[in-house]
Image 1 (cartoon, rainbow, N blue to C red):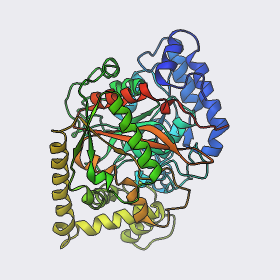
Image 2 (image 1 turned 90 degrees about the vertical axis):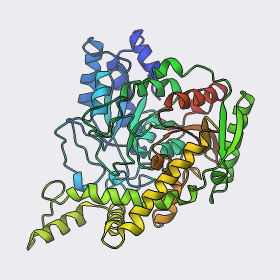
Image 3 (image 1 turned 30 degrees about the horizontal axis):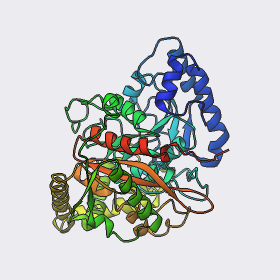
Length: 486
């Protein structure tokens, strides 16, 4: 692990001259060289970029709340250095002509970028097995998946290769891998963080967020990346709170909601249920009251999500035709239609093709009202459920994932089983609210497998979520556990 493996510790150590930014960058790069051949969290590593950014910090040319902190970026965020591949053959050689807003903000805050991380192709998946390049492994057990789609970002942090990382979350793609890798992951409110420069999957669901070890780090990252961006039409012009000064404040009269629909969800591992129940007991001991709430349309969440997301993906990915964008076939073709067909067949993987076909079908004449419009109506009902539930409670607590990390290949042949991994996370994106996963225990006998507690809050309730999670972390030590990756 790094000598200073959290954001605040690394930043403060650099400020106090206990370590230079260059020394910490070299530690990160050396750690990547040592353990990433096993974990395979990264698609690309940029030593020259990292060391130059670190030198600028040491020379006083760059400063800020993240000055000198090694950070990994998910490989669907556009950068003018290196490639932005989305772990797809379609974009294997894509060099972005511009930089994502979030990357610009991190750079302005002094961050040091060590590399770009693996993901399920175009962020479509829950295990990082759908990557066109390689499968990322879970640092706690190399035979198991790290979750997805931001599995590379979660695994890079868990394995001690960076101090924080960035992912994107369309239906749980930050929170679920955070849970499976034993780190914290936040899906901010839709519109809180600019999506400009994020390669689109489903534009009404996508949101960018951070992975960290603790809430002080999460607060620091959120202060940097949040805020209005005129280049993103969905960005909300809402003031950014001082998360880092609020995160440690105790909450009196905290009300934690328990949704019966989440408790009755099928397929929950007994170890997950036990760990989450014990986490709720910790909150009771801290003075919180636990109230029952209802989210009656939860059962329709997966179905609605897997109509809305593929429909938007079908539209967003239409641009990759081998002419305007993306891989172009080298085969001889007779006409433009064959060029499009061959290029897309070669460039996209099976899961991406599956979702494009689902979305195209649901948007087609005769089926639009039956599927897409109906899914949008369910979306409204789900949002209404959360609004009513939050009148009775401050946050809702539930598992992040129904099971701990599963073995590589265990679910890859069963798409429906894989989709059900998102049963606790998709409704957060559908409603556009905020969601946070933190470690709350372990399962397994021979090897510990992390379990995540998910906290859901109303729109723009990130401050409250950080405070609630901070209360738990001050009373427990799950977030201080590290996997043994030699």
